[in-house]
Image (cartoon, rainbow, N blue to C red; front, side):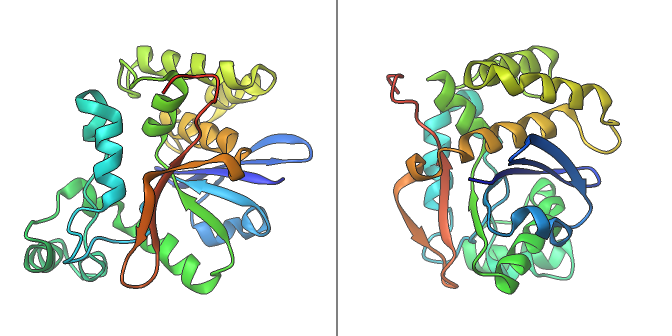
Length: 238
């Protein structure tokens, strides 16, 4: 099985691709430029797929993920706007539309990730057969750890905490991640981008055993499945 773990980064996207020769890291500016790795592969991506709407102003998968992460890490799950707000021409217009439809404005943090959200939406419109599902690295790490992590991924302690968990999954490939962390310019991708995409690649190998938040996902009005997937190690108690 060919698999990918994908996360946004400063210049575009980090893609960890696992094929016949082990993990390879690719950084692209546009997701459409990753077609050679995405086609025929199973991909997990840390970006919203499926939007909020008037009937579900806060996606059920986001609610479930915040509960899963508890107060320690729930803030890492951002509210997802409605489709019309995503495609608004300006931040103020997006805030107005979202307030009308969902009863709340957008944060600037949400606004700044919308170009990447639109890239994924456009790609799935153009190539609906691509096997891409939404995941969330903090949920994934919490499931591996059987508890939400103690440290922010932006701190040295958080980086070491996550690398230690990755090492429990696959020691043979951890060195490739370490090498990539040492050689990738920070202006291209930060350490947490590389680590997050890597762990999504690792669990994508368990594609047919992935669990979902919520347990029974719903869909937005356009038919996009709203879910956050993760892998549960049967040897763990969570």
